[in-house]
Length: 196
Image (cartoon, rainbow, N blue to C red):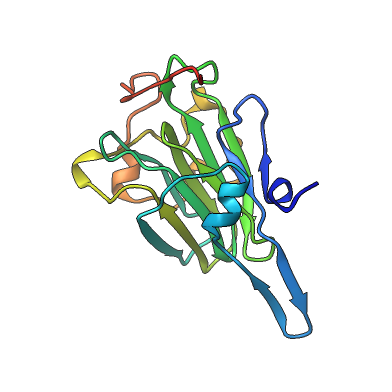
């Protein structure tokens, strides 16, 4: 198995576009070292997304929920998400009209300890729940932020069947996220194109 094969894993073969990235941690008595991003290594593994911006969020309380967010075209964003302090339950939902996996989700637990990352392609909504206080998330995006194209769907819609590890009445959300539409009434701006 090559280093590129070890780096990228498909979590759900039914949704191969969402990938788990597992950078190698080099540990010794001092702690560890990791290349948290290597364009060359990812390209060797078939990931060629060009990222243009880095974002960093901190959530003070466990049970904070962010999402499910996306940006509509022409500012649609792929994301490469990692947790640099604490732990998160990370989610990607396929929102591409006509996709054989439309509405299906992929989840992963990312933490500072495991160093894993989730690659979320364009056409997927993204959300997370913090599992520890003082959790920090850093993520790369492939397009600049555009408030006019910022959108989402409600995180806890039962139609999505996401097994969130936090209860709806105990979660911390922004006012914006509380008002996001349900999945059933949602008009997606993304169309699925069969890979050629």
